[in-house]
Length: 226
Image (cartoon, rainbow, N blue to C red):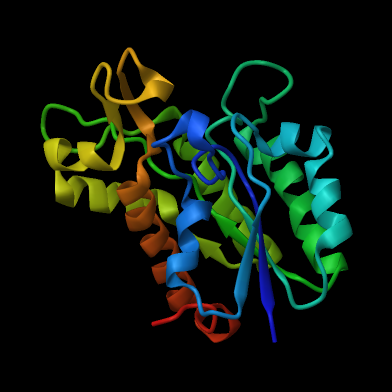
């Protein structure tokens, strides 16, 4: 029997085309870790927050498609901290309120919601540690909401931070969009982007999501191939 994962999120998750290559979203690579009877429907979009995703009607599209027994992975945070009114939410009020809408959509349709905290940005301090970010309150707010509403949470934020610190500043660059001038047509002038991933990085970070599903156990662990 086919099982389906619907993914609501931002550019760190989204499906990419050739015009943004080599950028790769985690939603593109998670399938490497899933059993053959699992299909991923990736609705994540670049630049979206929990608020703008709803306002643009994308959650409504998911609502029309998702069914009993499906899974809804919910990952937002990076763009919720933006100052523009179209995207901005406050961690412990409007952010949690919008996340609740996703949870309700899943549960109303008999699907299983899973909250996933944001990927940590690869910004190192001189002492070799990842710098704490302004978006850190959003993952914390998501975890609190998950506990309150009894929704499982995969803490990709802390998992990715720990992995980046273990790997180190220089060695972790290969996972992110650090591109030389003239290397790729999509970014002909070169790029130093510590938020978005290349393919290898998306594979590594998807493994952390797979690890989180295993840790949840039960029906979530059954999604994973190994």
